[in-house]
Length: 248
Length: 262
Image (cartoon, helix red, strand yellow):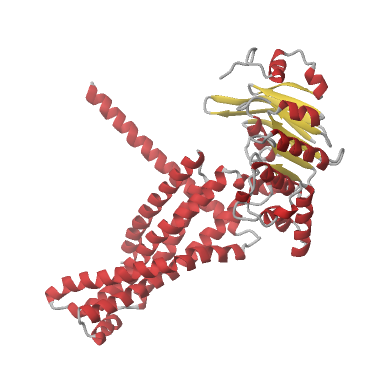
């Protein structure tokens, strides 16, 4: 589904991505973990085509999106859904209109059908009764759920999640993970998460990838990750301040 | 030795500032190119253009009427003060009308709209940028320039000439009241001066200027907001820069157009 091949990115003197390569299987839930500032969100932006790498290839379903024209890229983006870190909801629109936005832009459905579809997605995330509210009236967890409803509106093949549980209390975090699991249909839809919440993602992911100092240092199943002897992986899993990962 | 260092740092400073300005100018031209490209492609967001026209035009109406009226009153008083020294006080209607149509109307309307609309556009787009709303639009396969920028620039560019006319009309009403009621100039003399000395070309020049000012201020406002970075402080900086740059460019382009159309 996704194939990242030797992607490099540098900002002035800082080399953020130093030849990142990995694959994401179709229909899986794959999570990219790493410390804050490791370049996870930057890598995610590359996968959506919001940023361009200095070198390397990013294949989505066999098509290299690096250097692609916006019009071509938009053809691929129509099959994607993205849940941004804070939801990135349009604050000038109601919750219902936020979810209806991609449907209005990319379908020929009637207004009634669009509103029905938006209501269905809001029901899926348990926010049907909040459709007329504005994003500023919602809690952080609710905004993320609306963001998920919007990301799923067009029935995408691939959904990206940027830190889906950051800044949330443990119970809301659990609810978000449950939503991710329940909305994921094995084999049909691929979820790619970026997170540093190791406990939560280990429970729901089929595969975990770790980014450290601009490189992929480990990739495997959550079980394989737990038994990985690499001291960098173990320090991250334990959340220990002592070890090869230096604290900035 | 110390003066050499001072000279060197001064030259470096000037070169860096020039480089920044050129980069900014180049960025604005490229942004204009993107605007033209995306505006020419469907879908044409007519509804959004009308929504922006309401924000730029209708909601600025009272501000423009008030500033126009006061400008007309002051112009009449100052014009009378100067011209009555040569015994031409009754020509105050004509000179105020000329000043409002050719210069004060478009320029002051432009500057007022920079303050009310340009700053709001920069702040809105800037906050959309830093909260990833613009990224979200891109990720949903919608061109943000086409969705956010094109309607704002089209609406402002088309609305500013109308606002300039409203400004001019309000100014003339203010000037008429002051001239006839306070300065006791004959109403007939006031009106005939306008009829005798004003030409359609004077109005056309003002409208062309207002059109260009609308394009400049909305282009700069959208460019600054669209490219804002650095959190809420960055949005504040972008808004300030947008207002300053738009105002300077309006006055500069006013000089250039006045020279050309003189």
